Amino acid sequence: MTNSTRQTLVTNQALNEVLRRTESTTVPTHWLFAPHSLLLASGTLLGMRTPIGKLAHDAGLSALLWAAIISLGVVMMLLPTQLTKRGLRLPGTGVVRYTMISSLISFVLPNVLLFTVIPRVGAGYTGLMFALSPVFTLLFASLFGMKTPGRLGLAGIAIGVVGALVVSLTRGINPQGPDLAWLLAAAAIPVVLAIGNVYRSRWWPDGALPNSLAFWGHLFAVGVFLVIIAATGQEFSVASVASAKTLIAIQMVISGLNFPLFYRLQRDGGPVLLSQIGYVSAAVSLIVATVFLGERYALSTWLGAGIIGVGIIATVMAQRLEPQVPVEQKEGAMK
Image (cartoon, rainbow, N blue to C red):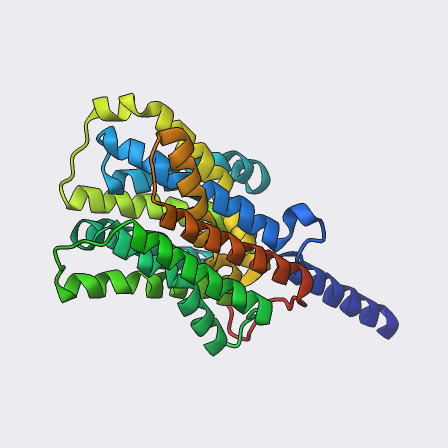
């Protein structure tokens, strides 16, 4: 083999490596797959979870069981594509480590905290904590030197926080005055969510695809939830599950559609944009609960939802107008 042939092979290998790396990190040009479109779509699907979850609770399903069902929906919806494209091959150690850590800090721990503190501090106060997730995500992303929004994007975050605070406050806070320990446990929710948002971007496995990470992450989450349910001795009625089969099917489909978009938004939009998904879901939940469940909210609550809407508009405009810099793939990312 001549030197020129060797150089050509090396060059081609280098180009192929660059293409392989950029395949999973380049933002698509079509507007349907742009980060702001993914934010609106994933946030809308996520917003449907709260009203459906309320109906499931009324049907007698426990919160932890419902969390397991949500993750199971992702696994079942993605299983055919995983079988077709990958033959359900076990992932490498880097992906296994990533999915285990990201599942624990992104799905399991937040849900356990959520279901534990709501009865003690109230849904309103817990909502206040969720509203702070973008702020902590922005802080952690800045510390790691990751992509952060410009002025318009920061304004969208600030406006969204104000709107979320208004919605949460008007929906009530537990008047019993919970103990400090429970308040601190609730305050841990936005910190854990922010850590998860940053971790999933900062240590995204090299070359991994969103659907694959969503599948393995939620498969691990299902196992953890079932272990917790068994360890805590929770029982559930087969009759309750059977009576809620339609709700379960709907939620599994919604979850299966949502989390592939969620992971793609994580990859293409970065942790700060992803953290604002809660603003979209909060507004959608209010609308769905009002239209389909007959719930009624005070005018001040709708004012807060309107403020959230303004924040979302600012965020979408920022994504379209401000220059977007790909998330920095720092040295030391998992292989």
